[in-house]
Image 1 (cartoon, rainbow, N blue to C red):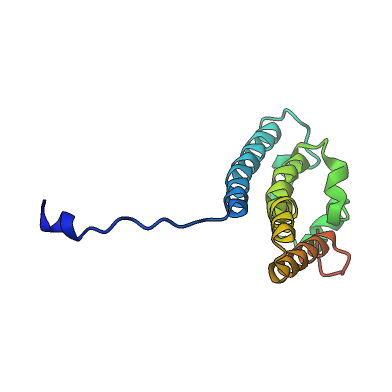
Image 2: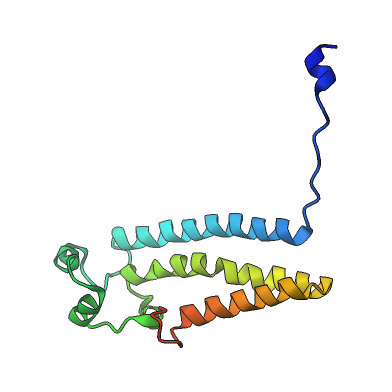
Length: 148
């Protein structure tokens, strides 16, 4: 046995709670699913399978505009209006974006919240609830801080 082998210590094992592994897997597989949805919906748009609300050839004329000016010019109101326009190829790709943006809230709600309730870990439970509320309120636009 060499000196190197004699000095080698066994690898330490780290006990990772089950909910952390599940949350990490949710983010991993959810991210890949979201990317796949983005690729599919973008392909539907680019190859003209779904009609576009704004002709792709017309897009360069809007590139230099501020978002409020662009929305006014094309007759949109912003916010969550995109949900009503999923029949347009240039809006269906928002599904993948919204899914990716919502993965954290999904994971916190279905995995972390129940785990901390079960453990009666009130400090982390309060953090998780606060995080869920902040993310949902920010995305809703209720507070008038932009949102979607």
